Image (cartoon, rainbow, N blue to C red; front, side, top):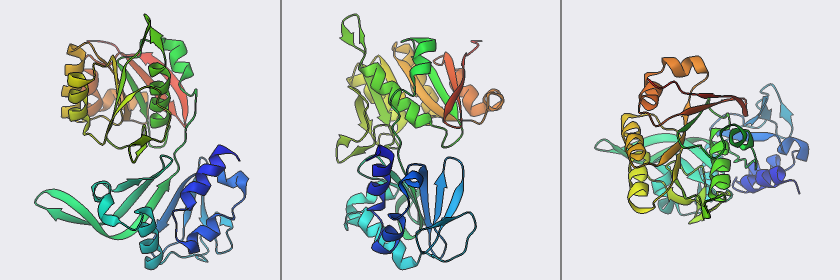
Amino acid sequence: MDKNVQDFNDIVSNFNPKIRNSLITLPNEIKKEIQEICVRVNSSIVIITSKKSFFLGSEGNLSPEDSKSFVVSQNDILETFKILCNFSIYSFQNQIKNNFITLKGGHRVGICGTAIIDGEKIINISDISSMNFRISKEIIGCSDKIFEKLGLNLGGTLIVGPPASGKTTILRDIARKLSNTYENGKLIKVSIVDERREIAAVYQGVPQKDVGFSDILNGFIKSEGIMRALRTLSPRIIICDEIGNSEDADAIRKSLNCGVGIIASIHAESAEEISKSEKVKNILNSGAIKNVVLLDKGKIKEIFEVEQN
């Protein structure tokens, strides 16, 4: 069976029978293209591919227009949520309070509902109103163009692109390839600070994606994870996803001072946005970033050097 079809079937197994039975009947050619499944209380199910969005009908058919023939009830949401948590919601509380659950296979479910707050911290989410099932893709070799351009000098590389442009997929493939590479007779040591649990997609302690011989700090806040990696894992490269705040910039500067290279990603739509964003400038001015890889629609659009002031 095609890997993308199997991934779709695996993620569909987490829905309640009513939704599952409609989704599982979709043709394999469509299943291969689906990236996200969005379910919202009292609304139709939205299916998102790389090119279009569709609505799911009651007979398992897809339509570009909402006929409201298949509407998700509050009970459908509750039943599906219980299945996601293996009927033990408490054991998933640490993930739920961060608005997501990582599934076996590395797939991810974003969760919306009502925040339960203790002081200034969100400690749980109740009254779940919608869930976004994102099917994780693993594309072996998708970073080859970067290696062709930069060789093994990837320390100080920023992967830039809009949401769903493939930043995490690229980072994952870089980790796999670098940590499987010998330099001067030794494997290159790679540490992954996987705050959002998406790069390696660890499930019950086991990485669901191929990240080679990388060490994984799973769920650690990036700034803290970077410092722990520097102190305890002696990496040559640290990889992390979605950097941006001042704490991240400070940790990146410290990694530079320790002679450790950073490979990270950040949200931006274009090279112009990179030059205007204060958040990005803060990272670039750290001196730890030498190269920028710009993504567009899941492909590498441009690789360029950062002008150092």
